[in-house]
Image 1: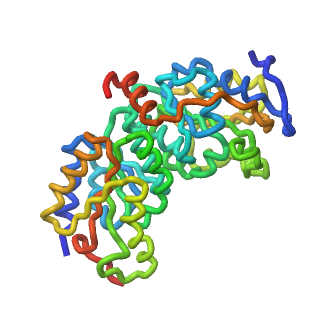
Image 2: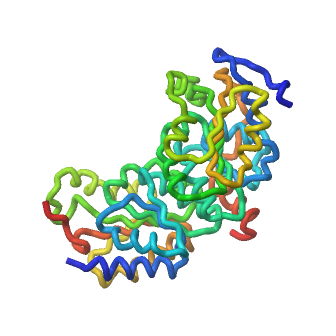
Amino acid sequence: MSDQSVWGAELYDTLVEGGVSIFAYVPDGGHKVMIQKSLEDDRVHSIPLTTEEEGVALTAGADLGGKRAVLLMQSSGTGNCINMLSLQANGRFPFLAIITMRGTYGEQNPWQVPMGKAVKPCLEAIGVHVIEVEREDELKDATVAAMGMAFKSEQAVALLLTQKFIGAKAF
Amino acid sequence: MAEEIKITGSNQRMDRAQAVPAIIGNHRDFLIVSGLAGTAQDMYAIEPDADNCFLLGGAMGASVSMGLGLALARPDKRVLVMCGDGELLMNVGALATVMGSGVTNMSILCVDNERYGETGNQITHTSMGTDLALTAKGLGIRNVMTVTAPDQIEAGRRELRRSDGPTFVYLKISDAKPPKQSSRNFNAADRRIAFRRAQLGHL
């Protein structure tokens, strides 16, 4: 299994170097390192949400104010976001979500499976580009690519950190 | 101004077409995000396509969170969120997120007609006992004021301009269905670009 303290720190640094200054999240074990780094970093805002869809609207509001924001969440939160993504589809607001996957490769909790299976088709149906990361050595390039599409081409993009990459939680 | 506001509707409260512009005052004091339907129409009636305002036409429940993102990005400005009771009820937890964010440059004007005006004036939970001012207080919003009468409008207008926010002003208005409004610009991409050009000076 990959070492989150290494790739989480690298992913965080890549986002901050790319101009991201607002991290909105619903906590997930796979985002533990990034969330902690954002809380300790005076250069950025670290915003805990009560539901993922708040983050969809929050990142669009940040764009109105000229700042770059990302949404960190687990795959189960995807379903909570779908109607709110009308904002990005209609308004061409940049959107970048970093989604840690559950319910797919090696999953041991059946409650995660239905939404895990639905993540990609749901996101694509509402107009979000999906980039899947399966290996640690793909992460940096994929993150830079996703940021370019989101913040330069004004697209909605989800970077999926797959369970082949981050591993499956043992139950 | 206060004594001119009519009292109407089955709940005998203030006329929204008069009360909402009165409590906002000069809208150029704020960057504004409005939720869909009633409050978007209220703002459009004050000034169509104002370049300091982004009016939602869907994405119900987005307004408070969108305003929070804007407030975080623009600490040099005061942000006003306008939302209806139905819009706020759909994502009321966003008020807890506002509290937790620590922003002080944000005010929320909740215009409560106790109805889903857009879909046929069906009752909302606020007509059955839900008090969104108590909710806002309970979720940790620092300054909370309920405005029910014309003689409280001026104090509400000042409250929205506090610098030590977040602030929540709960404007209780008539449940009468307002007259049909003129159609407005629903092109969100156009409004995004207009807002950014005006407020940032670039695309």
